[in-house]
Amino acid sequence: MTKRDTDAIASLRAVDRAASDLRRGLPVVVQGADGAAVIASAETASGAEISELQTLAGGPLSLLLTAQRANVLHILPSGHDVQLVPLGERISSDLAKQIADPAHDLAGGLRGPFPQVKDAPPDWSRAAVTLCKIARLLPAALGAPLPADAARRAETVHGLMRVTTDAIGLRDARSAGELTPVASARLPLWNAENSRMFAFRPADGGLEHLAIVVGDPDPAKPVLARLHSECFTGDLLGSMKCDCGEQLRGALEAISNEGGGVLLYMAQEGRGIGLMNKIRAYALQDQGFDTVDANLRVGFETDERLFAPAAEMLQRFGFTTVRLMTNNPDKVAGLTAEGITVSQRVPHAFPSNPHNEEYLRTKKNRTGHFL
Image 1 (cartoon, rainbow, N blue to C red):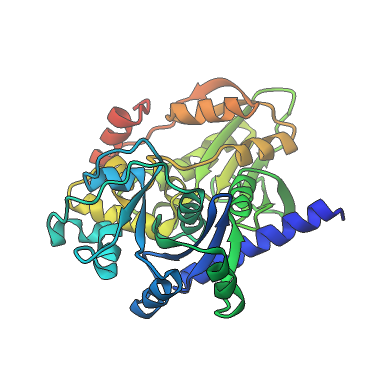
Image 2: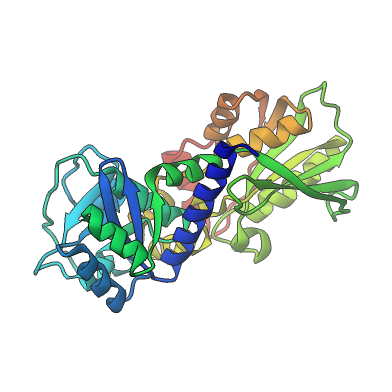
């Protein structure tokens, strides 16, 4: 193993440990090209940890929000993907935690106007929000810059984990591909008895993606394929708020009837925002927001999924041309951008029910689905 490989592994390990600390409510030090900072998750940091954050910083903290969340709060756009909101006497750290969490939006009333920071955010602030996403938390952090000597004390005296912005960027990029085959087994299914499941682990050590190959499809011909993002609520519990369960089972049945094909079961819950944040989005939907606005209010893009892992899985099986079962034009474009030829889009729609009519309407009107 080369020194470069060893350094990369050490960097990824540091990011995973830092993300784990954020989930525990602990602060971490983020070192960037333009200086270091101490940061904590706006979601998990306790009052004691925030006090420690302020002591270490020796100065005021800022709330770090995505541009999507800032727009929801009517903070004037700065043209940057992360917005800093300085904390002061009017905005306490406790209030900042509520501002970051959309569950408090309607209950707390209007809390603005907020201080406007138009300068480009430091690189550590972007990395802090990305680290919160890696930790599967709300994409919001509390942070403040640290002088070099204070950063060293935070690491050596206070025992805080230190991670670089480059390492966070590497960890985020590696989640897009570089899959390792883990295991495979025959798996007869009710709708597709002649099936085999394959598991692939991403290089970032994240959740495994799965491929279900039905029959023995010929790689020389366009293969019938379905990209299915995992949906715990729809696939397993039978939620009526979406059409995911019907799409999953319907795709397997259609592929079996075709004589063979592949279904990719991607570990990208909630269009890539994770199960906990999807539950938050569900609560917002109950308040009257559609699925797009709900994701934006939580602080995410409308869709945060990546298509590189799906393309790599297809290529490993020798499938370079697919007949894609989807109503989503972004899936066609995403696979095409990753080098997979989509020779045909195969419609894949199911009847609505009283609980998902608005969800399907939003798909059609706001994200361009063919419904």
